[in-house]
Figure (cartoon, rainbow, N blue to C red):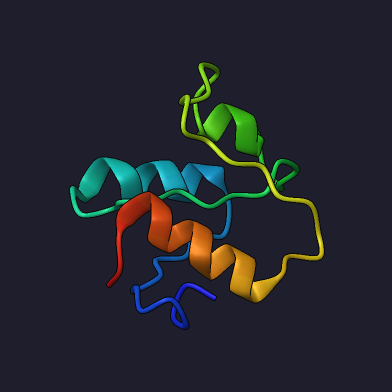
Length: 78
């Protein structure tokens, strides 16, 4: 869906890898995560205990067009 929206995805296998990526890069505009994930940190902790006001939660299954529209509204068209 990220590719279909015109963005370049950066994937992580778990929250620890995601943190390493986020700490090493300044070009990440959006974090899309599951709540339940393997490892010592879940998606809420990864997103920070203080959830940003503009956060969105989506149930599964995800509708591709809805997700693409949400990504574009949050960070603009690619």
